[in-house]
Length: 430
Image 1 (cartoon, rainbow, N blue to C red):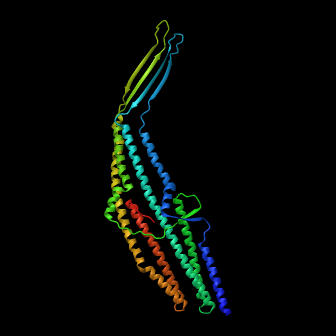
Image 2: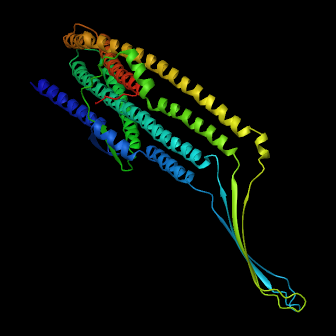
Image 3: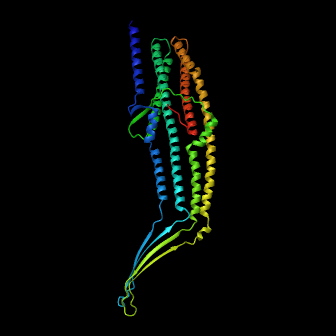
């Protein structure tokens, strides 16, 4: 009776110690944590990401460029005075004023405006493309945080199982049912798994810090993804995906808009070869000359004229040649962009199909079989029908199956978002 009470007390003590250790493994006092949905996370990324906010200034810069392209040449006003210095001869003095202005010919202002306007449209497309990549990158980080949380949960469950096994073996050793080396091995395995729990906690913290950085959040709060059931099953038509992407993807449209910019620059280069007219008007006033030799009344002279530069520089066509080559280059880059899209989509599509097949393999009974095998080994071990090594091997196999399933499911999600990133569509809702 006394032996039974002592064993019961020892079992209770060990379980309390293990529970305290498990609680210590779960606690993290370095930062506050709160759940965040995927939709709210993306909203915060779009509103708070600092790199995206900086990219938005490109729109303002392009708009300022449009305003600058509207500017006419400024008129030039001149004002002067003269005094011949002959006070004794009373030769008088004069005042002259004038204004000159360059009249641009050949549609230079219109050509500048078309270049700036097409650059504004391209800036808008490039911003859309930046957000397309940012959204995919943020989603991948969100999936990574989910994966790290799942891996931590797997480690915690494995640690709990091994800790219970260690407690059980400790009692069996006290009862003389097993050797001390078996009890010691159980404790070692539980301790090693606890270290893995700590490692997974650190990995999860790193993922959560990455989410906070993407949101541009400066607080000490860590946001934990609250998605549980992840479904990535979709049906795609490869040819339709390629066709839609080459017509609608923002970076392809930006490459196409770059051709328009190059063409407009060719027109601007042609316009710059046309001479401009200089218009000028002037007013000169001379005071009265009162000397006795040549008295002259005061006079006011009005003048007007035009000036034309001699476009000797048109002999050199460097600016026009550069614009023409830039147009050819932009057309080549556009074709390359379409080819890249086709390659990216085809590769992402094949990876998505492969990941889907792997997930199906896990869901078709692999996880369930591994769990049943572990439960059977533990049941047999508790009755002395199998060895500790077999139990540990079954536990490792079950852990590997669970971890591989979580990683494969994560790869399935990443392959889906990479496919949708490549196609320019988006229907992911975690």
